[in-house]
Picture 1 (cartoon, rainbow, N blue to C red):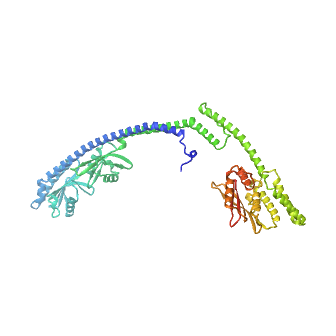
Picture 2: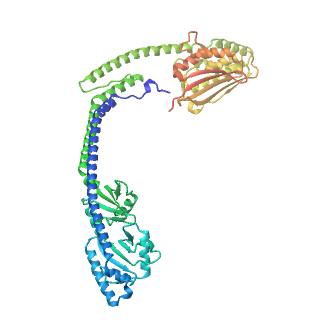
Length: 584
C-alpha cells in the first residue's frame, strides 16, 4: 500500500546538492585510486620478477656446489685405502689398518675443507667396525648404527638424508638395493652444515627484513635470523604448495612478498620472501597521499554541505516548516531572514499571506461562532411544550383528589425541572448536574404513571462528575422513551440509564451514555432512516428530538461524537451518546 502524497519521503534540495558534489568528485577519486593501484601492481610484478631471477641464480649456484660435492664423494669411493679396509681388512696387520685409517682421515679432511657446506666427512666401514671422519680419526661402529644407516637409505628422499635435525649426503657401496640382505662394504657420508645453509639463505633476498626457505620432502631449512620464529616459518612453508609460483606468507601479522623456485637436482623448493612494507614503501606513501586527499575531500564536502545548509537548506526548511504550520491551521506564524537575498523576499510575502489569511479566517470563524450560538439557542428552545400541559393537568387532578403528599413532591420536582431548563446563564453544565435533571424528570414521570415504569439510573462515576457537556443533552433521549417506547402500554416497563468506557481506533477515551428501554423499538426502515439523518451535516428539516441531540454533540465535540440508535433484545430501543473525553 503506497503512502499518501503528503507522507512520502522527500528528497530535499540539500541532499540533492550534496549528491551532486559527490557525483563530481567521485570519478576523480576513483581515477586516482585506480592509477595508484595499477602502479602498485606493476611495481610489485617487476620486483617479483627480479626476486625470481635472483633466486634462480642462487639456486643454480647451490645446485652446482652440491653437484660438485657429490662428484667428489663418488670419486672418493675408488680410494685404495678405503677399498683395502672394507674388503681386505682380514689380511692386513694392525699397523697397516691404522696407517690406512690415518691416510683416509687426511683425505676426508681435504673433502671437508673443499666446501663451506660440509661440516663433517665420514666413512663407515663395517668390516673393521670403525668410523673414520674428518673431525675424529676413528670411532667404533656397531651393528645398531649400521642398521640405522641402512634404514635411512630406504626412508629418505634423495639426495639428502635428514635424521635427528641433521642433513647428510650418503653413498652406499655397493648400491643400497640389497641392504636388506647384507651389510654394505662401506658408506661415505658428507654431513651438510645447516648453519652454513642458513647463512646462505639469509643473504639471498638482498633485503634486511627478508629471508629464504629451503623445503625438502624431509626437512625445512630457514634463514639464520629467522631461527627464533622457526616454528611459524615451518608451518607457513609446510602449508604452501611447492609447485606454486608465488607463496603467500604471513608471519606474526606481517605480510611478505614471496617467490618459489623448484630444483629437480636437489628435489627441493626454495621460497624467497621479503617484507612488502620494505619494497612497497614508496607506493604505500602514495597511498597515504591518497588517503590524505580523501580526508581533504571529506572535509571539503563537510564545509560545502554546511555552507549549503546555512545559505539554502536552513532558510528553506524554516519556510517549509512555516507552511506546515499553516497547513495544520496555525496562522500566527511569522518568519524572519537577516540576509538580503531571495529568501528575504519570500519570507516577507509569506508573512503578508499568513496575516491576510489569519484576518479572513478570524472573520469567518467569528461569524460561525455566532451562528452556532444562535443554533444552540434555537435547539434548546425546542423542548416539547406538551410536557408542560400534561404536568399542570396532572397537578390539577392530584389537588382535586386532595393527594397533597404527591402533589407536594410533584410541585417540588416540577419547580426544579423548569428552573433547570429555563436558566440561560450557562450553555454547558457538569455531567452530574445533567444526570440530576434526568432523575428529576423520571421522578415526575413516575408520579404521572403511578410507578408502573421502573427506572434504573446508574450513579455518575466520580472521575466524570465534572465532565462539561451541553445542557439538556440527555433529557430528550429519556423523554423519547416515555413518548414513543411506552406509548402503547405501561405494563412491565423498564428504563435503564448507564455508562460505559471505551477507546476509539486512535486511542481517544470515549464515554458511552446508554439509554435502554423494553418498549416498542423501531422497524428496520425507521432505523435506516435515522442512520441517514445522522449522516447529514446540515439537516434541512426541523431539528427536534434525537436530531437535536446529535447536532449539538457534533457542534460541541466534532466528528468523534455521535448518537447511535439500535433495537434492544428481546424488545425495545437502545440509544447511545458517544462523548470524547479529554485526557488530563
